[in-house]
Structures are given as C-alpha cells and as structure tokens.
Image 1 (cartoon, rainbow, N blue to C red):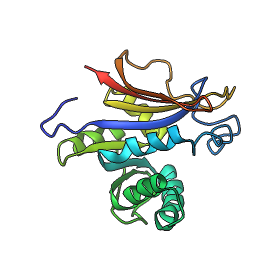
Image 2 (cartoon, rainbow, N blue to C red):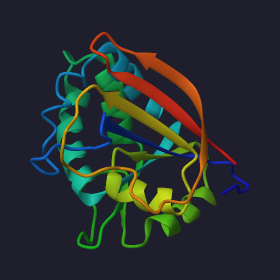
Image 3 (spheres, rainbow, N blue to C red):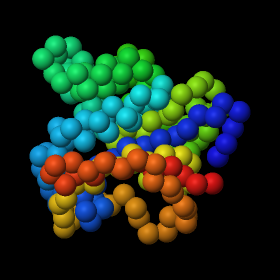
Image 4 (tube, rainbow, N blue to C red):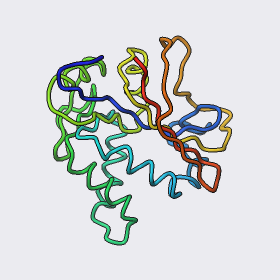
Length: 199
C-alpha cells in the first residue's frame, strides 16, 4: 500500500526455529529466548528496528508489559547504551495502542484506539512521516500480514525448537515475495534478518 507520505509499516518479532513466538507455557513463556536477547546481534537488531520509526503501534498487553519494563531502563544509567536508546525512544515516541478494553492511556505520548489494525495503519500512513513500527506484537502483526500491509519484517531467529506455542505465519496468508536486505549471525547461533516486501 503506497500513499503520499511514503511511510513504511515495519514489524519486529523473535521466533524459534519452528516459527513460534512463545513457548509451550503460553504467551508469557519466553524462557527459550532468554539466552539470546542480550547478545550483540540481538542488541544491534533492537537498535535497527527503531532508528527510522516515529510511531510505535502496540496491542494493550504488549504496551502494558513493555512500558512498565522499558520506562525503568530509560532511567537506568547503568543499562547498556543500546537498551537505553530503545527505551528512551519507546517512552518518548508517539504510541498508538489498540484495545477494546482501555478507555484512556496511562502512558505519555499515547492514544488508545478501538479499531481494526488495518484501518489504524491506513490512517497513520495518511499523515506524518517516519516508519510505523508494530513493536513485537503478534496480535497486530498477524492481521497486517493477512491484509498485506507490512513493508518490512525485522526477524530474530533463535536456534531452539519450542515444540508448541503460537506461530507467526498462519495458514491462509496471501502469497507475497520478500527481499533479504540484512542478515547477521551471532555467536550463539541467533540470526538477525531484515526482509523488505517486494511489490
């Protein structure tokens, strides 16, 4: 989807080798990812995702978890500089949170919207500038994949087979072609990849 502002819609997510974004223990089971998220390659990818972004698009659950954690990191002078950079960006940038239950945002620079992700993205693309980052939020990424509205995917692949848990790429998605524009492998076997949608 191209428009006059030229804003890209990007998304980041970490996946196991079998394509799952959490483990068998449910949505809060990230134990298999833990050894990799502070690697040099993962931190490089963390910086890459937000550098061109001016809007963060989140679901409510992700917003609650991310903003409670990263707000403290933004203030922590002992935190890794890359973590602080991302944390400060997340705290200070425009945030749009999709929710059917929240009526007002408890965070600064945030508005809550009760609307389909595709409609919200269309509205965001019509104004402003800079990338719109769907920030590690499968509940938003999935409908945007289904509507073919994502322009870039930042994926971290961790060398673990989860065996159970939800997958990002469900059956029935529209066929699409992607170009690999960045790839980097870490010492633990983790791979950072950036794919751009070929239209």
